[in-house]
Length: 412
Ligand SMILES: C[S@@+](CC[C@H](N)C(=O)[O-])C[C@H]1O[C@@H](n2cnc3c(N)ncnc32)[C@H](O)[C@@H]1O
Image 1 (spheres, rainbow, N blue to C red):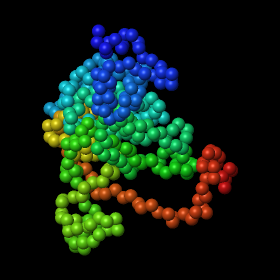
Image 2: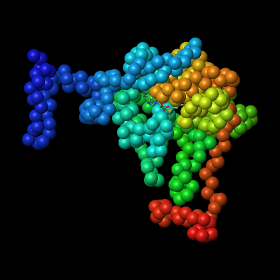
Image 3: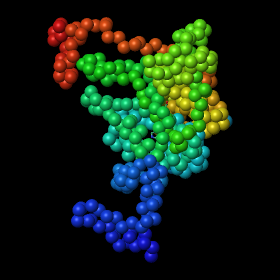
């Protein structure tokens, strides 16, 4: 019997007089544990803890328990891709080829307090739930591929404070699974409504939450990418500068503004803030759903989001996967941009409606050329509109609910 097996069968782990647990492991075991921890980008203790969580039954370890229902069925196909109905964990672990995907572009259900019809995990269970997808991501992604996750922040139930779940997700993916944060992006939705009304409109103690996080992750530190593909229209100031010139000078920050700044590169390098209104109120998808009594998805992202990352991170013919497909925006955009694609959605009604993206009369325009190029306006912070004495601070931090009542009765 090898030392390895002996240690296991004799149950020889011991508690020392100092209370510390000593594990009787072979050098080989120790080496492989250390290697796996390093591969996941964490230390041995964090790795062992993650194994315990996996084994606790809180969730199933996908690679050992591929119990995610029947194999997803391709229900709609184009020349370049297909919409699968079923559980994407099963799709990624069994159906798709290993290391076949160039980009996972997705938006999982957020940990919403007020759940959508498709169901949302609670923030405190979110990481355990999300872990069940990661073995699938690891299996299908090519080594130089990217994983782009659009994820919104949420408020804690009944409180004017925010959950940390989406940051914890990011830390988990990097620390436990060894993903690299290639860059964090923020999606500013200028059309976002001021919610939750209680904190923003009624007690006036928070501001409008109008930004989503988008984590661009990768297995490698050097995923395939080019920012030349996503240049944006020059600002009016930059256009003037290109036309009229600029005197070389050094900024107070030490940056040297050289003649290179006068080179016309056809557009400027975008920041990691994507300004895109989510108000495709009259989209062909919506009209088709209404006309055919199909269930429109309640949480679509605008086409500009997948279009940006598909263009920056993939070539024509590459494979794009959306494992939380919803209404299949990613598929529509990938198809229009000549990428192969697979979208997987678990709820049949959304799969059914997803076809609308391809059946609608006015076929999907090419998002790379048809997207809005005029800038959205964002006002600079303005402090002088209301005098401070007309807007006193809520002394109790807004703890007490405002009395509601008809104007003139309780209010002054
Ligand atoms: C936030 S929505 C995605 C919306 C999508 N980005 C769009 O623009 O339409 C998340 C979707 O993931 C689906 N989903 C949740 N778990 C899934 C699973 N295991 N496999 C496939 N889809 C899943 C939900 O039903 C929901 O429609």
